[in-house]
Length: 327
Ligand code: PBG
Image (cartoon, rainbow, N blue to C red; front, side, top):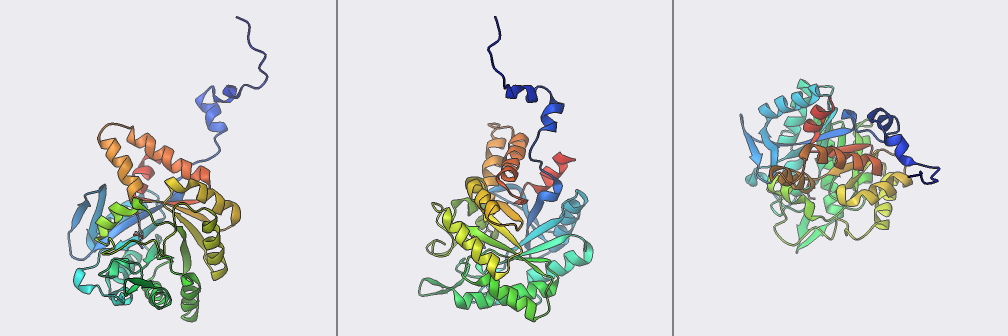
């Protein structure tokens, strides 16, 4: 047959693997990855998290080995999340700024063992509160300003322990400004703030709450985390965090919020971070285990979609696996 009179044939540039590589617009690199890790008390503990196969709660001794392994694969940063003993929890989250607390001891140990790795600490009350909420509870409500005071203390004690970036994940109003001020007054001008700016009230956090036994004991987090139906509101949150002094902006979750990543990227020139959360991890792992998807390919496609949407960095439980695949 005679060829159709088509001038532009996009398929020309897909003809060979070399051509496809030449016109590839986005690349996933090990430099994009931040590895979230869970730490608990004790020694020689490594418990797999049921809903997050391949992820573990480590005691500090074994966590250091895990982080060293990640660093040797080229991963630049870890984000630390603690499992706090029930008897250390109180409504005011007092343990969160104990200079000898689990987080503080862990940060010090990481910095002593692998000084080059960037340590990011979580700033929120939920792991420290018997209620599992990100703020102080009074009559069933989550107090804002009282919580912000605790968050500033928590961030300061993490900076004192050696954290490079503190990452408020609580969604209280005004916390970025208060944390910045607290750090600066104490002389920690070089400790940065990775703000969870657009953090949604999401069912995708389920497995993470299993990992830290931190599910809210009553109600939900909808009075502080954002409504998943909203897009413009994310920009309002982002603009406030920029004014208050954020160094990086996070969108969380990532996969169902790629449009938000895109909007934030358009709006600001700060690095944009996507949090590929626990539920996103669990879905891929589950389908992979059932043999219903090609797990490795789906992981790479998923993370690349976040890059395409505009993420500069991705927090992901797949970090080590991906670093290996990219080698
Ligand atoms: C809490 C916090 C949560 C996550 C990170 N920090 C859970 C929540 O807001 O309830 C979720 C991370 C994940 O699901 O991977 N401050």
